[in-house]
Length: 54
Image 1: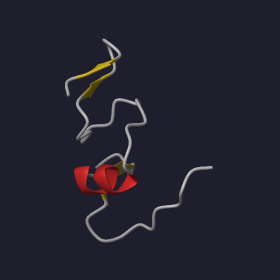
Image 2 (image 1 turned 30 degrees about the horizontal axis):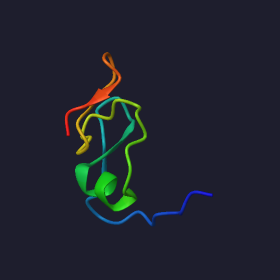
Image 3 (image 1 turned 45 degrees about the vertical axis):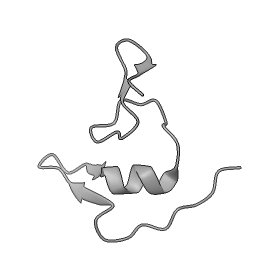
Image 4 (image 1 turned 90 degrees about the vertical axis):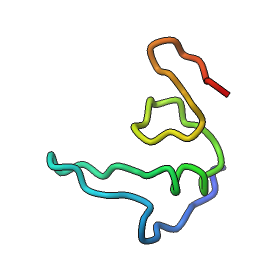
């Protein structure tokens, strides 16, 4: 079961299209890569190649 991470200031911002975009701060608190190709992925995941840089 996944641990619920409380949302704090700086964890996300709203895009001009109205989507919530999680920041690197949130991803690091979560502690793992979801392999969704997130814009601010600190784990270096590349969706087209399905690989990580680290």
